[in-house]
Amino acid sequence: MSNYLNLKTIGMTILTILVLCLFLSKTIYAFNMPQITATIPFNGKLSKTETANGMADWSEKEAVSSEVGGKIEEVFVKEGETVDKGQELMRLSLNNEDMTKIEELKTARAKLELEIETINLKIEKAKADLTALAAEQADEIKKAQDNYDRLNSLYRAGAIAQVEWETADYNLKSNISKYDKQVADLKNLMLTYDQDIKGRQLDLKNNDLQLARYSDILSANGSIKAETAGTVGGIAISKGDLVTANQSVMTIGIGEKFTITCSIPLENSFVASGDTCQLTNSTHSFEGIVDKIVADEKAKTVSITVRDGKITPNESFSITFSKEGEQTEKLVPNGAIQQDSSGYFLYKISRREGVLGDEYYTERLPIYIGDSDNTNTVILNDIGFFEPVVLSGNKPFSEGETVVLKNGGDFFAKD
Image (cartoon, rainbow, N blue to C red; front, side):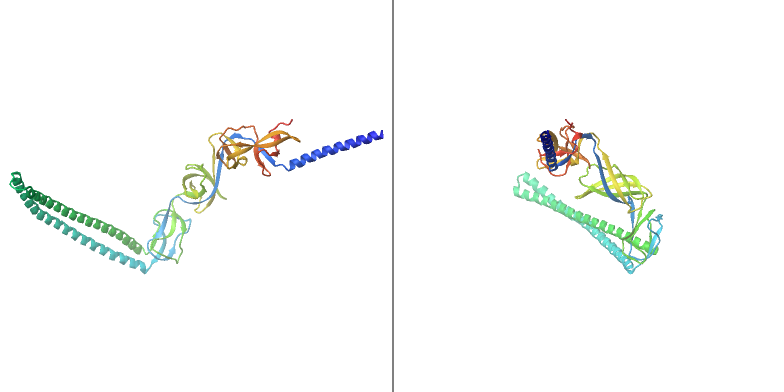
């Protein structure tokens, strides 16, 4: 009896060791295999989102410039202040350079007037030359015509040789051609003179406009005024600064319409003119409308129109563009898509009988992809909805390799 119990105990011990070895072997075997998570294709719509940062500025604004140089004596407005049309913004004292400029403009005006008078004299001379030419050539042409008529009659009667008739014909045509050319040259010369006068008159007009502007500023004691009602934007100068002629000194924003610009990637194809977008910062949250999109070599610049009196120039915003696809597509998560030199593919997961029981392995499934968003991609070719594909794994693997499917119960029934 004692020997039987010993044999039974030994047998149980050996069986336990075998079971333990089998478990440890399967655990070690599985530990060294790739651990993967699977998913399945599904029907859905793409939901595209793009975020960017932008800065606000008035859609319509006017630059205020000092038409002459000088020193800023007073600045009467501050940034953000509302001003009326004609309101004095600042005052400057004119320098000697501006007085010199006025004298230069007056001298230039006198010179232009003299040049116009000289050209007019040339035109009158050309007209007189044209009249004299007409009288002179009329006599020459008449003589040539009379000679041709006389010789032509004799030639027809056989009284003279053909060469005499041809000479008379040539002389008549030559006189007419010479006259026509001289008339054309004089007319072209008069046309050139006329164009010169028009050019000088345009220069004279521009000169008078500049002279008038300088004179107006002088009479107003260097006062710079708002030419339109609006809100003062950036002021580029301060009291005591020296400015040059035509230097910009400030901007005035007009109305409550603002433009917010931002950049999006060139590959973004879903943001279009007319779309709405969400703009937010620490104090505002509202919708804007995409006004226009301009692309360059590096990115697309999006201009967004907003009407809100609470916005201030140079205010920064976070901008979100969102758009859902118009139709239902066959989708897979972006992380499931693989690519090599042959194209795009998925790793399909199949089950087979292995040494230690059921095991999972991967198969290559070629695909054609379409559009995508930040999460999913459209699959264009026909693939099954119920076959799981690899979504992620803890280490690289290849086609046909045995893997551990962490969520296998979601796709395969247990025997």
